[in-house]
Image 1 (tube, rainbow, N blue to C red):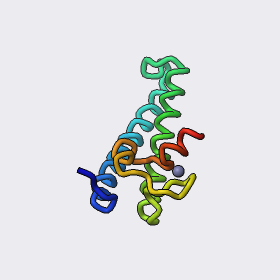
Image 2: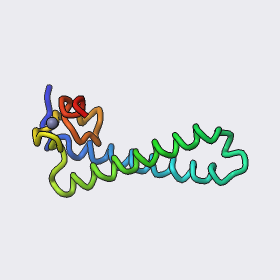
Image 3: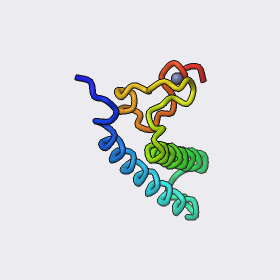
Image 4: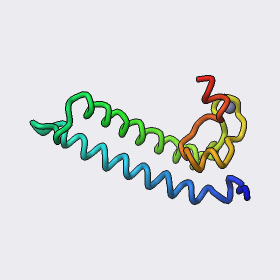
Length: 104
Ligand SMILES: [Zn+2]
C-alpha cells in the first residue's frame, strides 16, 4: 500500500516536531554537561560529537518544518523530483532523493 505525500504530511509533521523537541532537549542537556567539571562523565571528543549531532538534528528538523510551511517539502533540492514518501517516512528531514544523495 502506497500513500501520497498529502496523506502523510500530518504524520510526518508530528514526527518532525517530536524529533525537533528531542534534539533541542538533548542539546540543552549536553550544553549543561559541557559546563560541568566532569562534563557529565563524557570525554571532550565524545561530548563535542554529541553536541554537533544534536545541533545538526535541530537544524535538519527545523529546515524540514520550514519547507513544509513553504510548500517545498518533499521536493528534491538537487533535481527537483518528488522524494518518495517511503524515503520521507524513514528520513522525514531528507532534502534529496536517493540518487542525488548518493552523488553528494
Ligand atoms: Zn534528486
